[in-house]
Amino acid sequence: MRFVVDNQLPPSLSRHLVEAGHDAVHVANVGLDASSDLALWSWAQREGRVIVSKDEDLFYLANRAGESGQLLWVRVGNCRKDALLAVMDRALPSIVEAFAAGQRIVEISG
Image (cartoon, rainbow, N blue to C red; front, side, top):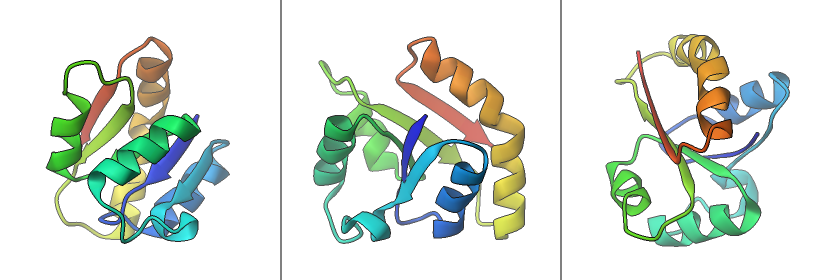
């Protein structure tokens, strides 16, 4: 899968996804760290990437009529990086399966 990790999540998450065999970048690595949610949403759609974010505004964007982008909505509270990566590891197989089945929004929580 192709992911772009949003600002509220650490760059180490994108590296972790790469180590798990996915194509992942962090917004800071592609010059989108100061972009609006709409600009990020548009870029991710053009690039065929799933946005990984904690941002509720992106959830609302993803739910607009006619949208086709995909969002992995991370509903994990503030935690250490290792705890976040563990949640991602546990959920990753079902995340990939859900997006492959056509879901546009997948929510994970810890």
